[in-house]
Length: 165
Image (cartoon, rainbow, N blue to C red; front, side, top):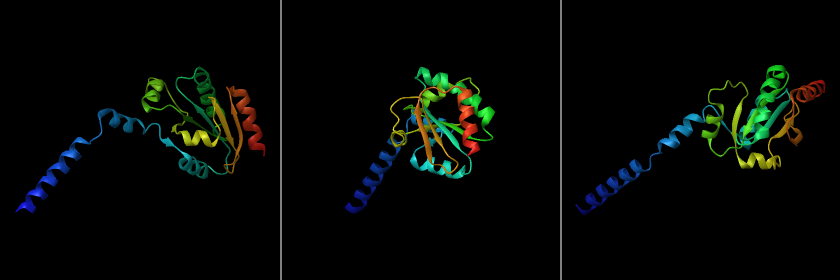
């Protein structure tokens, strides 16, 4: 009989712990919001580049609180519109919380793919300043890593050279 009481007590404690360990509403909304901003770590980047092999890619790291990054976003959107058929264009936010992205894009039309990056991905490319542009050749090999703001005409000239190779 004592064994049954112990087992019952363990089940009750287990149920209590499971019930109390549920995510908060903030965690729930973050996971829902992350659907619009998928995670991009080292593995995801490799998969993305493999999926888009045969076409050069242009990625840029940024954050919502960076004034230069805010200037670069429209340039990247325009670049995507003019050259997206020749070059893959996407961005990786280094914001710590997806809510920052939700707030930044609230009420704005967005065509630029935005991924939520991590420190390991930024470290792979030696990102020390934002925005930072990373250019990959058609095989997915990084060939340019440069911080700064790049106007659309400069990006288009870069795309011309990448496609001509």
